[in-house]
Length: 466
Image (tube, rainbow, N blue to C red; front, top):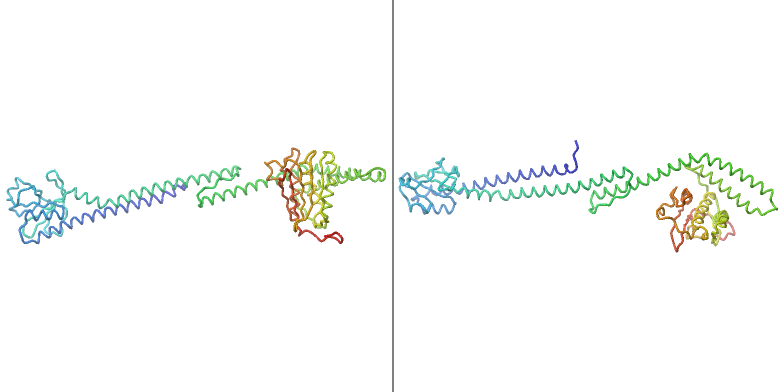
């Protein structure tokens, strides 16, 4: 059986409301009983006073008693009748005058004033009274007529505070509880709806409630969960892409590697045969390009595998110069200006020279493609404190805004023919060496900043100036 949060909130409050109503009813009844006992006490005191007096009871005495108690009195001693009503006979009159002046007789007449009560309702001259009687010591009978309306007014005055407090307080509590339950129910339904959206693949953050309470903390946790799931989903997608890419392209890459190896051997043989006869600069560039292609194919075949990072002394300036030399034929073809501001001194670094070469080639090559025909690419190498910094600036339009924040993620590219692995591989290489890559737009240029920590640096060789 389903118990909603709203029902769980309202049920205890409803039980509490019943308790408040019950207590208020009990308090009202108790107040009414106390009021009745108070009136009966006043009536008994009157009967006690009249029972103890030694003089004749007359209208004046009964009038005083009426002023004190609010009740009407009729006294008879079997000969005369005395009433507290000023509209009656002028004074005591014979009992046979009862034919002209009738008075009610109580159904219950007690002998002891201590057991006297208000009696049962009777009607006299169109008015209703609570009538009771008591026999006095002198032999007469005193009839007490307490106005029923006066009794009702006293009863209402006694129970009104408890009744108003119980009813209106309970209703106010119930309305407040329903309002709070409705509000909490809507907020919880909003969280439930958001979790269903997350389960359906919508990881966009939900707006946080303005009230700082536990539900706001829960909403923040839901947003954090959605963000982590989004990152996990993206990681799974990238992993699946790498797996599929490795499966589909593994055979093709192996065949291409065999072809590249054969072409490189043929060029080496041709270079040896042409030594001293023709300029072999173009052959050297072609051989370096084939070496680079073979290394890239090896990296492609090793996707998803853990590769041990080698640590060996290498000259960063030389690695960058080699990458620039590999890109110069492409720059001459597209008329892209590529220049380098070399470091003021040799910058040695302990790292994997092959992977660092790929890092520089990918970043600089990406800048050359971004600059386009007639553009300019400038590479600056310098020391900044304890870091080695390489900045690559191009005059291209910069990355598209929709991928600007994800440039270093695999398979993210703004080029129609690109696959989005160049900058991702470069970023991984920099991080593996304890550094990093970031980028910015400045003065119409896109600047990629590669930082390598000095902790990976080694001392310079003699005469290097370091």
